[in-house]
Length: 442
Image (cartoon, rainbow, N blue to C red; front, top):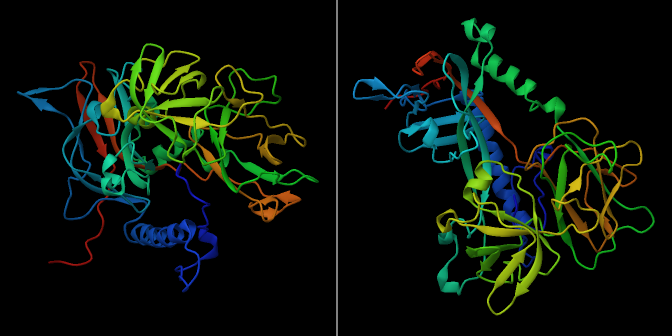
């Protein structure tokens, strides 16, 4: 999550059952958040233990059913409908409030870049659910902030986001009616590089001898920007994964009021942490669709600021399909890397054993694992503390552990096998949805 948190202390391997507050003690956001994480973890495990990897309620048998769209006796070509209802994926509740079309999903905006994947005539597809949690601030949902307080930022929210996606099946997979949806999905995830055995990993330490030299406590965020694999050296930059970093967990945000030519008018030049924007900063223009599509546009460098007019001039024009619609809650997020960045404002993911430690700042060093498929949005959070002159990271300081990304965690469930005939007509060949056992009757 990209909020202004002190740290994330929830660790399921510790098997804590609750957090107990003590009288007269300092109240910390981490304790409060850990209590909710413990409860949510237990509830989702319970749901998975009861209903399995995925299932819908027994009394709502049509939940997330995939069907052809019939308009005046004719099928809508290369599209299908998604029935309303509830469905559980790895214990996470997905809710669809109304009938939705594949090409018009509430959380999967369509643009001219084949998003979502365009269905083709005479092809077969696996239709599946992709589920994850998305961080929502008051910029995306203004109702979070209480106007009675005069405008200060308070808390953020986590929203369960789902998208119905498709993966093209081979001729053999299409003919194999005995294949389970789980088998097809697992095969697809493995071939797409999303299986856990190919997950990237990060190791973190404070540099030997100097340790953490910062003057403030920080929660560093290392986030993958451009997807790909790790490079063998910093010179081998083209086509490899890149990353960006923030000392405030990516939480320094500036709402955009208007984009006019090559300038951005912001609501305030001081971000929600009262951190001001400066010439030379690298920023990312974000809106609702940018995040939902998992975009990775080049970052923009601030080259000019007009304080009185709240105008910011970036190094390049903002891409035409992000930030221009006020209804999509556009804002810019500041990232803090400066030295060694490429033309797009990011740094290469370099993994050369054994001396591939990358200096972030003030003695904080990171190392990427060589294997793995780095995905846009993968992130790690690193608490750095003045009191110890160190970073909080698993393992001995001289041998820090490798850790898979703290997020974004995606969960998947198969829904149907779909055939698109030569005329574009959709036909559900197999329904892979499951129904939970009804444990009681009314």
